[in-house]
Structure formats: C-alpha cells, structure tokens
Amino acid sequence: MNAQWRDGNQLQLLENGDAFFPRVFAAIEGAERSILLETFILFEDEVGHRLHAALLNAAQRGVHIELLVDGYGSSELSDAYINSLTAAGIRFMVYDPRPRVLGMRTNVFRRLHRKVVVVDQRIAFVGGINFSAEHNTDFGPQAKQDYAVEVTGPVVEDISRYELQAFGSDRPVRRWWQRRHSPLARNRQPGNAQVLFVFRDNEAHRDAIEQHYLDMLRTARQEVTIANAYFFPGYRLLREMRNAARRGVTVRLIVQGEPDMPIVKVGAELLYNYLVEGGVEVYEYCRRPLHGKVAVQDQQWSTVGSSNLDPLSLSLNLEANLIIYDRQFNQTLRDNLQQLLEQDCQRVEAHQLPPRNLWQLTKNVVVFHFLRHFPAMVGWLPAHTPKLALVEPPVQPEMETQDRIETENQGAKP
Image 1 (cartoon, rainbow, N blue to C red):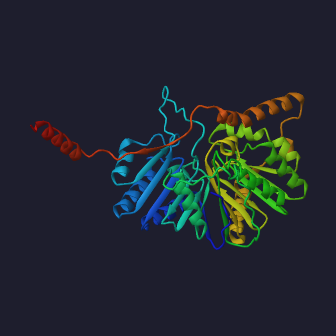
Image 2 (cartoon, one colour; image 1 turned 90 degrees about the vertical axis):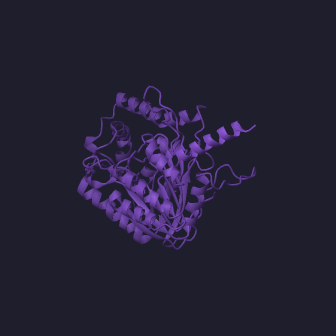
Image 3 (cartoon, helix red, strand yellow; image 1 turned 30 degrees about the horizontal axis):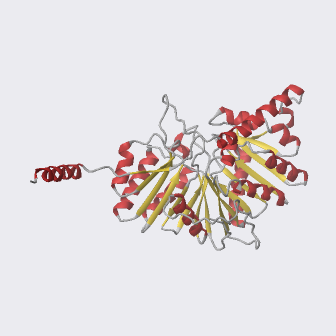
C-alpha cells in the first residue's frame, strides 16, 4: 500500500485519555457497520472494562468488529475477557502470542506498537494512547502525558484499507516488479486539512516514518519542536537536528525527565553533549512520564502517532503516524507543547553537561552504538516471524451436549 496525501480532512487533537477515551467510546457506541481496533496495550482495568462493554453492545447491534492486540503488551488479558468477546462474534486476534519461560515474556522484540481505531470507515483515531487507565490524568504521579488525533475525511479510507490488510481481511496483491522500498510521499501542493497516513513495517516501509522526520528537519525554516518519550535515534536524525539549528532554526527537543524506565533517561543523556553543543535546545518534562510521540515544524507541518525515535520503533516495531499539513492543527499542538515547556520542563544547560574527556567520550561511543544497533541486530536473527493468532469462540456447553448425543445415536444404529 502506497501512502498518498489526502485533502479535505477534519482534525482534532486529543490530549491524554481524558479527551481520547470519551471520543473513542462515543464513536463505538454510534457505530453502525464496522469497528477496527488495534492497540499495543489493553488492560483489564476501568478503561479496558469500558471498552469491553462498548464492544459487546456494538456486537449485539450487528456491528462487525475486529480487534487486534499485541502478544507482549496485552499478555495479561484473561480467558473470560477474551472469550466473552469472541462469543459475541467479535474477531479477536493476537500479534505474536508466545508462551512465557520461567514466568518471563520472551516476545520482547518485533512488537505491534500501533494504536489505531476506525469506525464505519468514517472516523479514525491515530496516536500513542493505549487502552489503559494510566493514560488518564487522575491515575496519579505515573499518569502518562500523550496525544492522539481524531480525523474524518478522505484519509480515513487509507487508514481503513491498511487496517483490513493488517487484520488479514484484505490481503494486498504483490507484484514481483514492484519496488522493494516505497518512495517518500511528498506534499507537492501544500495547503490545509491535508493528511498522510504513514506506517512502519518490516517489509517495504522500514524507514518511512524516520524519512519524514529527516525531510521535515531539512526543510525547516523557523522552528521545530519534537516531543518524544523514548528518544535514541540514529546519527542521521541527530545530525539533521544540529544542521537545522546551525541554519538558524530554533530546534527544541522534549524528553522524559521523570521516566517510566530509568534506562530511557540514561540513553537520552548520552546525546545531550552532541545536541546542546550543536545549538539544539533540550528540555526534560518533569511533571509525569512523557509518552507522546509528536512534532511540529514552522506553521503548518505536524505529526502525531505511535512511533518513538528509538531503535525499537525505527528498526523493529510496527508503527503508524499521521503527517499533517494544517495551520490550525499545527497551532493547537504548538501551543500545547509551548505550555509544557513553560510550566513543566527544565532546560538542560551547557554547564550541566557531562565533562568532555577521553573516558567520557569512549564510554558514550561504546554505549551509544550498542544501544542503537542491538535491536536491529536482533531483527536479523532468524528467531521467529511474528504471526497473527485468531482466537476462536468458546464452544457452547449446549453444543457439546448435542454433539455427544448425535455421536451416541450414530453409534447405536445397526
């Protein structure tokens, strides 16, 4: 599937679960024909139970529903939770389900990391918010700061078609002469309300999202703000950030100051010297864990999605972002990030950087290259190819009894 820019869309930025969940549940409750939903994490908490109830109600109305979760992120779902969905006729699938070894999840790499919902092929939601209560601000100090986009318009058809292919309901036809890697979809006639659905897979779109970030940095003229939860990109993106700053572009980077995993901050700090000394403004978001994956450039370009700028998202995971060209949406997201900068972020100043000596330089180089390339090397290993597993509906007790009676009757015939 080759992505194309679509005109004439309507967009709404949704911040955190407080804005996201009510809009998604309202769309599900109003569904008439179909619901396609995939997520990395689905927990059996208050959010998971609300989703469960909304999907069951929709299924009872005759809505066709397909649900895909990741086998690592959603491994705690109970049989009762899943079976009640499949018994209602919902097509429930798990991406790469694998048994635990000594109680540990072994399917760490090659994750389904997308968060996408499509209702009636009319409205779609794309972003970084999982179906878990930790995305609501009343969750407490560990509540995650994150974003999603609600979109209607022509781009929803692209999202829906891709989701059907991802679910295996509509398999694409591949030709041997087609390109192995799809070219970057450029916006040849910039305007407003233009949206591009871009995804990363392990086939023809391995670096699609990264390429859009690189192109954005190369074409920036005034300012760029990137807020990314797990920031540890390759040298190309770091270099383009510095190049933009040296051209006079104000380049701001917002990373986690209160990380949900300590190694996240350790990795990002390895890059501080290179970025700050190159003119990039680095900020740590300290109110709570940052989970967003968003960026804005100048007055029209922006992106919201599931892709971090780290080795897992850029080398292994299945991701999806919306690239948006719209002044109003850009302004809304830019204002939001500016508020974070002013109220909840601390700037990393030059005097706070680690000393530049031979030991520090050697350590940074070794650790950087190990962390950056380890997931990619894992991706080369022939360990396994992740597959979708369809969960079959549970066999009803009355059906089992009827089958037994019929078998006994057949055996009693002369």
